[in-house]
Length: 175
Image (cartoon, rainbow, N blue to C red; front, side):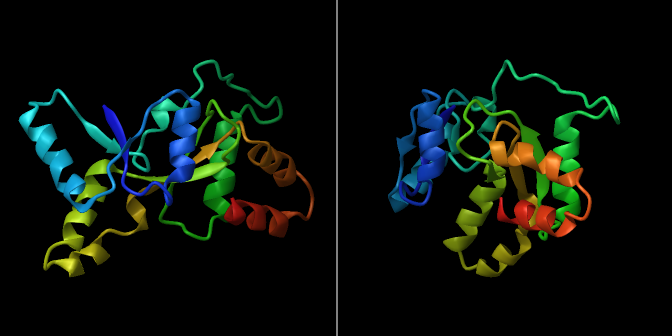
């Protein structure tokens, strides 16, 4: 799998996160690259697979030695609690939420889009079927929440405090 970026400036956070994990990122920022990469995949008979940095590449960033923490009060994992907190307080309800313990604690959250859906969106931009773009809603996006980030860890504490619902909602939507 070759990970690439189509816009070095807009995708700099993703690029830095991957490079910090020792993963190289190919810069494919010209118009022809977007057409060449799928073509190269097809002629390589599956030997090469391309994924854009904002596709679901979080498996390369997940810490393998993360602990599963159970709360003695309700026997729930911290990842379950964080997921519930985001689902209950997030203004954008169509986004899927997934909690991962990433190697780096520098980024609290990021959004990923399925590679195939993103490619369909890109093709729709260059075709007469620009109206198809409206069919690709936020429901295809996944919000990856980094459980190792200090602000995300604070969510559990704030959620357990009396009369802090507004603060919790504000923090979730800010992240």
